[in-house]
Length: 211
Ligand code: PCA
Image 1 (tube, rainbow, N blue to C red):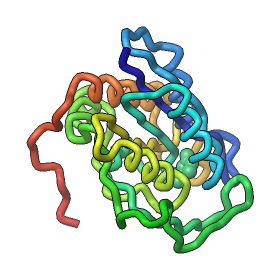
Image 2: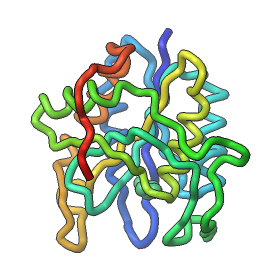
Image 3: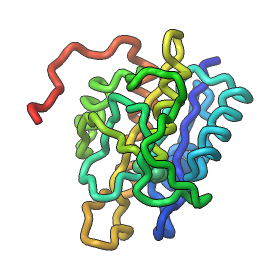
């Protein structure tokens, strides 16, 4: 049976909530198969996140890994295209670690592409009326770190992996940053899972930006 591993993150920094974890829990509660969906909430820690991801992969042997996280300040769901092999942490992680200018993965390429059908996912989330965009940067913090590890795990195999950043959910942003209904975040993530399962090769359409 096809298995999808879907993760969100716990809260981090000074925040009490993380909509990625809430949205993933919502997707799990609504999932009706037939594929097996395994969900989990990762710690916002450079070491702990990848340890947990590796453990989940070893235990569940997924065909697809989709990790999600919060990108506070973004107004749209962001489907990440690439993980850059660089950590430059602006704030300490939840374990107090703050690596600066070190690789996520030693002795690896400078970057690794997500292997999800990212353009088909953007098309389908947009068709559901939810603001969405392709993104060329997942940042240089724990989310990007997890993307690099997940995408590297999938590289050169039939497995697929990628990352989706979500904005704040309604009622959560503290500085007037953009928010979307939590239900939209969950629907967008579920669409990403469904589209990945139904789409092997991505659609051939221009999706880039000039800057
Ligand atoms: N967002 C952070 C880490 C955890 C999360 O939800 C990031 O974008 O790196």
